[in-house]
Each structure stands twice: as C-alpha cells, then as structure tokens.
Length: 459
Image (cartoon, rainbow, N blue to C red; front, side, top):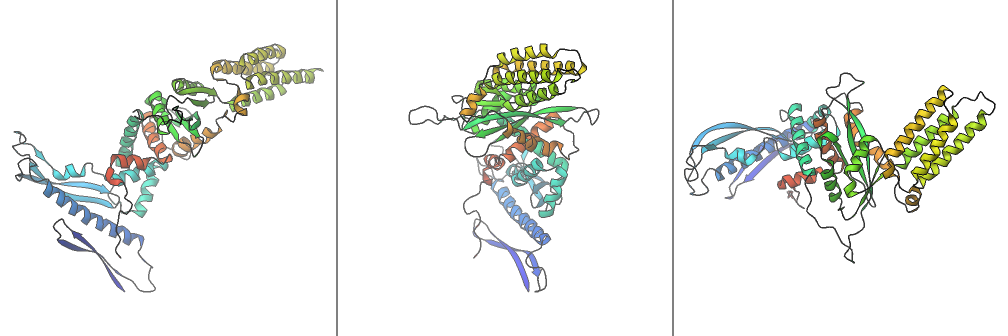
C-alpha cells in the first residue's frame, strides 16, 4: 500500500498550490500507522511550507507605502532564523527603504522581521517555560527533542535566556494592581472572603557564589492560599529581589480578595517570615502557627525528662516541672501569652543551674521565651479559632515549600543559583503550578487563544 500526503494552499485570490509532503509505503506486517520520526518529519515539512507561504504574503502586504501606496525600493536581502516547536526555519527577508513621504532619512525596514516579532514562536516559548519550570533544562531539552522536530530549534543557553526574560515579565506584572471592584452581596456589603488563610514559610536554595557545599544558601519565601472551596494557589519570591506588599496585593486580587476583606496570614514565627507578615499587615491579621508553638513545648518537656535523677526526690521534682510547663501551655492556647511567660519564668527558678543539663534546659527556656515575646502580637485565642473552624496551623503550606522549591531547586539538583535567577524561575514555576501560564501567554499573544473549532478536519 502506498500513501501520499499533500499540502494544498489557497491564497486570497483563490489560486491553489499543492506540495508533496511525504510518500509512505506500508505492508500488512509493517508498523501500524505513523512512526514518531515520520510524524516529526511531516509536521516539520508542513510547518516550513505554511510559514513560508505566510511570510510571502506578509512581505507583499508590507512592501508598499501605507500612505501613498507606492512600492518601496528594495535594499538587499538577509536570512532570518525563526524557531518553532517543529524545527528552525531559515527565511529570506528582503529589506526596503522607507518611503520619502514618511521620512527624509534613508532608513530601511524588514517587513518579515516586523511580522515575526521575536525569533522564537510563542508556542515554543510556552513549551520551554512549561518544561523548565518542572524539570532541569537538560532533561527538558531531551524530552522535547524526543517528541518534536526540535533539531537546531533551541539551545540550553537560549532556553535559559527565554525563561529568564519571561520570569522578569511575570515579576513586573506581579507588582501591577488589578483594577476591579469587590463583589457585593444583596445588602451592598463586600461578600465573604473566599480565602480562609494564607500560609507563609521559607525554603533555602544553594547560592552560586557559595564557598563550599555546606554553606552559602539564601532564603526563598513561599506562600499558599487556603480557599474555602477549590484548590489553593502558591507564590514564591526571593525577598531581596521583590516588593512583597505589591506582590501580595496582586496575589490576593487574582483570587477575588480586596482590602475590604481582611485575610489571615499564618507563619511559624521565624525572623524572615515574621518580617513578611509585617509587610502584609495592611491586608489582614498575622497569626503565629500553633503547631510550632506546641512542638517547641514538646521539646521542652523532653528536655525536662532528661534532667539528672540521682537525687532521692528527683522524680517528684521532674514531675512538678512538667506540670508547671503544662500550666504554661494552656494560657498560650487561650491567647494569654503573658501569663505563660510568667509561669515559665517560675519554672526557670525551680530548675536551677546545678547541672550541665539544667543549664542547657535554661538556655532552651530562655530561647522559647524570646520566641514568644517576639511573636506576642501574633498569638490569638487558638481555642476560640479552633471552635469556629478557623485555621490555626500551617500544615497546608509545608507541602508547598517542597512543591515549589525543593523539587526543582534542591532535591537531586546539583545547580547553584543567583538570587535573581532563582527569583525569575520561581515566577514561572508558580504560574505553571497554578495553571495560569497558558492564560498569560494568551494574554500576551492573542493569536494563541484556541477557538471552539480551530481546525476543520477533512471528511
């Protein structure tokens, strides 16, 4: 059996030209259907003839002056490389002198360059961003080259530059305000906040200028929203490379949250995330994560159990210290950290400093007291919030750090990052994880928007 594939192009006047794309011969014991290499060769050939036909039409339309309709004088020809998902195309691009009715200067233009815009098609840029956000550049290139005719279409260096440029564009947009009016209910008041909370945490990425593998890390801030319905969205940024306040305003507005509806911000109370919470105070209430408070008190109870038990009344003394620690935990749970601090201060007098372990426990108690004092303004009535079904822990954001940062930047990755490079890739990765990158490309390149019936298949 012999099969022939043709491409028929019909121009605006109705004239048609046909081109042979492929001739395939099959027997019953041969491969069923197309092979991957045949499909790649056919799509690459179809792409080349389609773009060349479109380029010729664009050159004809732009080779006359739009003002006086006179033909422009030619000024030589050069080659333009255009990269697509189906291979790199080398196109002849004539240059024309500008018409004298528009300017007295003898400059020239390239209609084909103006029509193409960039030297890489938007579809290929989208694929580059999609894969680079999820996998390393090398692995992404090998996967795409397996299924697409990408020979000479891209390189790792060009790929990185494209993704970096895209990340910078997304970063600029993240600081732009969204002009929208909050939705109102039947009484003319803003509707209920669609988010229960926004969790904030930090992750660490290896710095490119690190002196060794054991040192030289910088922190990345990661956050995730907890909606009342549906799945949450994530954001991430390197604190030194971003303006957190403007970024958070955009992040909340994209999910229908405006300043009239305050949002709860949960964090573990660390120095960097506490600073981020302070930046976001204009958008809602910062709250200390209860899980980290309880975990620190559990560590203190384990340290108390490890006190020396060589004296006769030591077990009774240890049990009394544990009861005192439990008495300190209850006020924190009910939103009275000052009472808890007073109880822990009493505990420090009961423990003393006679042994090395007691001295170590004193240091831990002092560290916990400093931790509580630094977060006094963010300790709510956890019991009341828990009774009303409001979030009090950041468990939902712990996985986001692993999802956003660790899987691409740390785990099984030997790459080191500059803060700016990591920040830009994080913008692309979060848009991919939020399933928003395609919408961004369709907004930048309206021709990418898919119609309900984009291709009419032959009967």
